[in-house]
Image 1 (cartoon, rainbow, N blue to C red):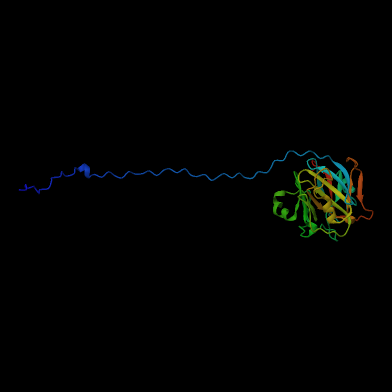
Image 2 (image 1 turned 180 degrees about the horizontal axis):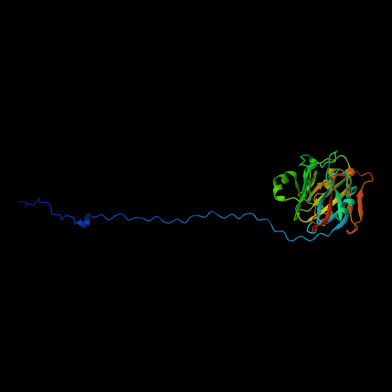
Length: 283
């Protein structure tokens, strides 16, 4: 006989209240993220140039490519070019660069920019703060010689038009064409019409020269000046002044090797000159 077994289910104790309590889910605190800093880009810095040596005031003559260059070199920390304009017309005050220099106690002088048949300046001109003329858009006005009471420069007409408000120009002469820029020859200049020429040359810092060239073309003068050490410094920038019968350079006997005049016998009166005077002079 098979023993009878109980079919009564096993008694299971009911769960305690604690067992029925489900612990709250654990809150995961968000991690505090450290903001990622963008990589720092250093602003480009302008290289600091060592102090430039002082260029002594002197008269120099060089012969290159069949051209005779006569120049007065100077340092703009000690000397400056000022515009000497004749408001009453050509030759109304001075017949020569030497006469213009004498009025201001100048050490040298050179003829200035171009002028109309009526004797008006062909371009913008500022003489010790007084403005005359207009901004000429032709190639004869491509360059601007401009100086404030603390600095001087030769810049393109377009660059001056954008920055003129920052210049506070005290002396300015518009002329052209450019003969050298960044030490390079200017392409496209005429290789015709040989004639005496006048110019301003600059090294981009403090060294300058005003000069006279014997008969040559604009292209020849550009090739002769650009990047060359002809006046005691490497010429980085140069601009043409009025030439031909207007060309007139005078160097005082007070300048080393000076006492020189370069002007033709048939030179004609001009509208203005650039006179080299001490920087402390404020007339």
